[in-house]
Image (cartoon, rainbow, N blue to C red; front, side, top):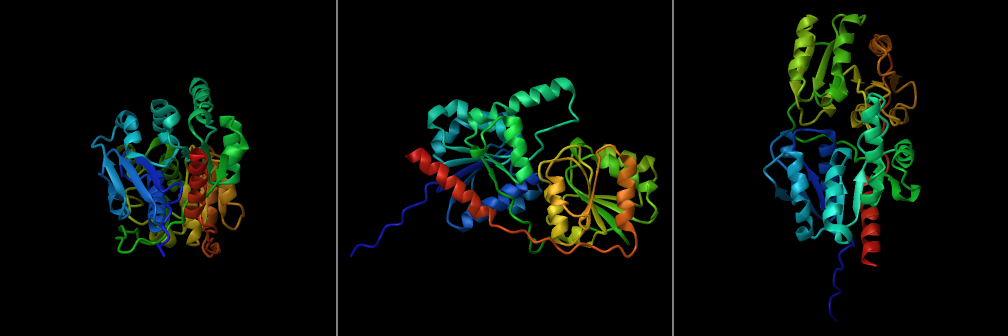
Length: 365
């Protein structure tokens, strides 16, 4: 008898894209998901502006890379027309930053475009924007249902925000978390401060507002506690100048990107996030997964979904400097009980594949 032939799943070939591998949370989460999809036998292609950056070591084996050798956003827009030749079954837009590329692909390919799934990686309500910028942002969000077949939110509150701000129907919004972070074998631990320290993880960019945390440090009751921020970005010079102006050179450490932040978070007394806006901040979940309490600004509707109990951490208003100091002081109190490690549930890799297969099968029909 003839052997039965293997029938590939509808979404056998997944295509995604990234500007560079400089260490953003969006790109790191996408690589984790790509590794999971490859592990179960899917083909994954990544259109990549530049291979340079600390995340280069996290490229999973078996990943097909289309290198543009140009990290500018417009290079990715220009490459939109090449998607047809790659013949993917599904296109995955890994975050808000990349929806312009998704829109260009839909515009160029029209009805021949594969289904496009876009993940929400940042807040859709941006109170820090001026009136004109906020109006433009809302108008842009309301165009998304025209070029995204499905939106993925990482929490129920973010899904509700997508329905409200994008004016998209609820049946076109799915809730799927990011894959949980795991220890990276062989990752080198950055130099750690002596004694107790507060840990921050994130790019040194305006959104993250590390200046708030540095400004809080002199006002803490414990004058020996240090601040360690893992990440790199355009504000390094400005933050170093702030540290010098406050005389905190012996208490603030900026070692750059770390291949694996989990051991650093686990050893910290408390983790801090002071952003103006976020999507679903992965660093909060990572810290809580290793039993480290968190202090965060209310930078997203998802923050209170993650820090849903007082035993896990404290959420403060964005511009309340006094509340930030008080929250950090509270968790730095000697003998304060740390939370039990929070274990993530579900299987995001397979949840994504189920969604991809459904959309690809609908297109085939």
